[in-house]
Image (cartoon, rainbow, N blue to C red; front, side):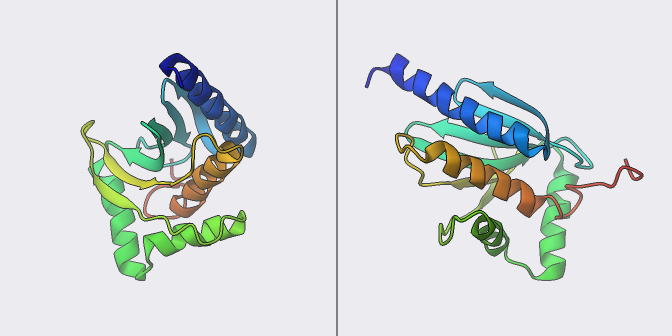
Amino acid sequence: MAAATQSALHVSLLESIAAAARAADVFGEVRVQPGRLTATAKAAAAAAEYRVEIEGEKAVVGVYTPDRWLSHSVEADLLHTGDDLEELLQDELDEVGLAKLGLTIDHFRNDEKLFTFRSVTGVRLDDQQASKQLGAILLGYEACFRHLGDMHQDEDEA
């Protein structure tokens, strides 16, 4: 497949996911750039965004923040509760019919110097259900992280 055709398909895929993300009304601004959808965390205590990224033939979904303390607040919450992050994510995915995906979550500081929680999805980009599946994973990430650490503030706290 020619690179231009592939790029156009990726943009179309990301635009479709963006429309679903906007309709869900759980994010702030939702943008599509070449190879990437970004959706701002609506009520995090510090800057954070959710992403769907196309890396070659792989789709990656995650949450990213430049704020060390926001990342630490998520980690501290998990340490305090004893919850397993991957199980929490899978619980959210089960709710939307994506049972047994078995996504792993990598946590690191990326080349952009952003604290990153992300999963390589295994979703085939040429699958007719790719948009629906990736949209569900994005919403699952948001539902999973929304209540962890300082990823969500009540309006009177902001």
